[in-house]
Amino acid sequence: MARLSYADLEHPEARPLVDRIVAERGSVLHLYQMLLHSPPVAAGWLNYLTSIRQLSTLPGDLRELVIMRVAALNGAPYEADQHAPIALKEGLSQAQLDALPAWEASDLFAARERAVLAYTDAMTRQVQVPDAVFAAAREAVGTDRLMIELTATVAAYNMVSRFLEALQVHSHDAR
Image (cartoon, rainbow, N blue to C red; front, top):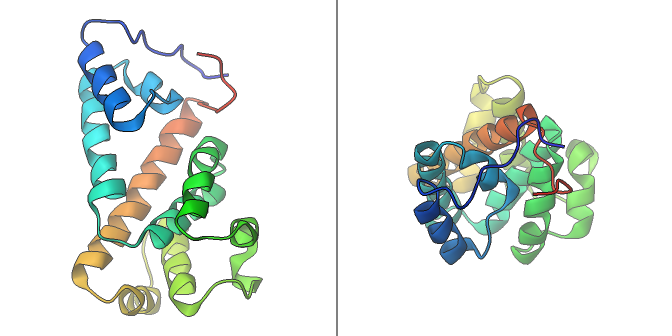
């Protein structure tokens, strides 16, 4: 159960953003139901995460691999619940998702994916990224733009998981 009640989606300050979220995403997920306690924060969050998820040129399989790994590292089940179906649609296999907790010992990940996972781990666990890990990730994605988008994706979903877990937002919560 979440530590705070979910926001009133009918509140006049929240209503325009609720309408936008429904139009863009189909429903107002628990994450946004919580964020809507502060409509300005929710609006900024929506813009930022829309840029990461829908406007970035980072391949969808890598984006979702990063998101799922961050969720695993940070113990964020809501994030994993929301993104597992997307990850599968983007081309990851259920076996890969199952292997993420011990990806280093798995043969299910190609060199490109391994470099991205190592980068995700370093950013999430240590914050500072060793030069060799950075260089491998940079080679794996190929361009400065993709490196920026990879880095922003790891950072953004660490933000998401920390928000969700601090407030104990979970998929099974009642509205």
